[in-house]
Picture 1 (tube, rainbow, N blue to C red):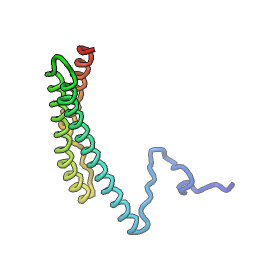
Picture 2 (picture 1 turned 180 degrees about the vertical axis):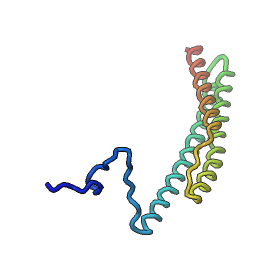
Picture 3 (picture 1 turned 60 degrees about the vertical axis):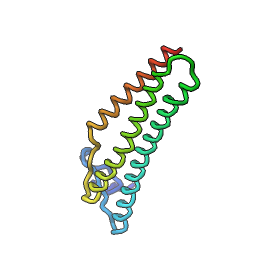
Picture 4 (picture 1 turned 135 degrees about the vertical axis):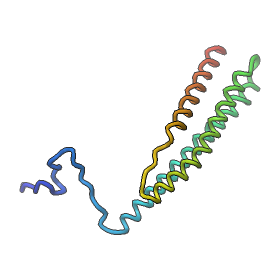
Length: 141
């Protein structure tokens, strides 16, 4: 087997910290990469919507359906249902904001990370709702 030149595509880079980047060979490849990036952004937007709609559905189930099927105290279910509904609304609203930010960044050829404050609030709120549901399950069990 013949030895490969040090920087040939088949051989590993001499310096493991170096990253080999293949530049597009045609304008069509650039257009395709841009299209894929926009489609990925759209899928993420739809994922935010799915999460929001799921949270709203859980809110209806916990806040309205479960109390109708339960005898006794229902206010904890109503609180949990309202909380999940609020979380769902936050997801749907942030989906629109995030989509606009990402579209502008893509037009500039840039990347914009999600707002750490929004992610932190949603994480904390979701964790508190999970603890509330855990408390309800333990208290009712």
